[in-house]
Length: 165
Image (cartoon, rainbow, N blue to C red):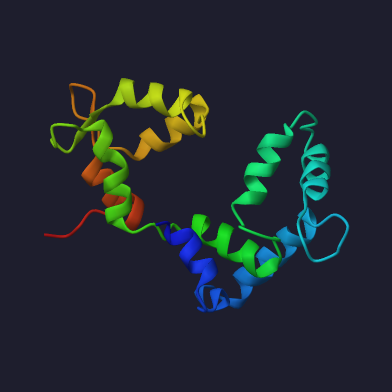
């Protein structure tokens, strides 16, 4: 069960998640990607957008994966739901904590920084070294090289201001 898809399939109004200025920014981004201006983002739209950005060798499989996230035609409402949720960081804290569990079989609350870096760069979405460095810049790392992922999760969901005690 993914909150990303439940939001798209529910009757909730995704427009209420954002301020008017944010919606306008999303409309502009959607317009840039919707190359043929038909109100729906298709594979050819994505290809042309990537070409404009200088990336000419995007695989069809990658484009299909992107389009499949929408579970149907990607109109502006679906676009807003997909990207808005990612940009707004609406993953609940429990979901993020659960994502770390497989890397912490003993339940210590820590994951090894070097091992986690290797996994991030070689599995699934394959983050770049720069992206991993950016993520680790906020991560509380102890002297032995372990990431306190519970604190990192708090930072991700609440910002990097410390809790006042």
